[in-house]
Length: 222
Image 1 (cartoon, rainbow, N blue to C red):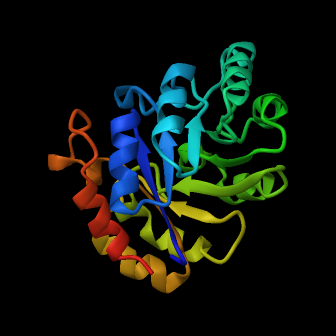
Image 2 (image 1 turned 120 degrees about the vertical axis):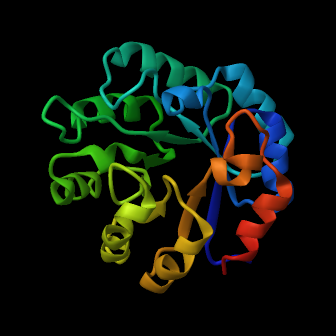
Image 3 (image 1 turned 90 degrees about the vertical axis):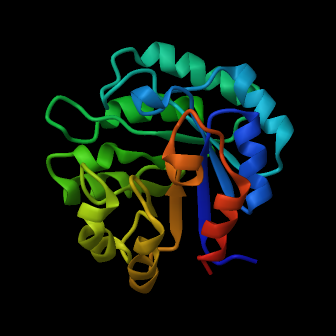
């Protein structure tokens, strides 16, 4: 069995099937990558869930940026997805001071109680990264943090990712991740990786996930 995790962004059931065929370990399901990935409709989740046997982490994010302007609406969306069978999620919110918005996070966690979840790249935009990581480590169900180590990409954040590899929460490296980053990240102890455009022809979001590209990524990991 693989020792590492390869998570692939899927926008629909066809993407999810290609990711599974290529050997992905998990799906992150989103829609609208022009806005950095938003919550999918229940029907999209249901189609993906029916199409693959992989774990599916569903994005809970209603708007650009990392603020949560309408907690009630997102809680309603999370409740609907949970009722449809979703049991893994991705979320993360910051307040006006660019700190983790614990009230917003905890409001959504109430709707997905008992589920595992990822705190997404909001971490890379916090004003105090160490304080944010300490706050996250206390949250129930959190098992990884999706991060590039910088507000830009893994290329700029590589030193941060390697420094954080041994400290909880678990690092899920992603955000401009490329295969040449894998060796230094693996050497530092990072064992979870997230990719999206890199497994699509030409790196284009309007191109579907390519199973052969996923297979190449999986082959590069232990």
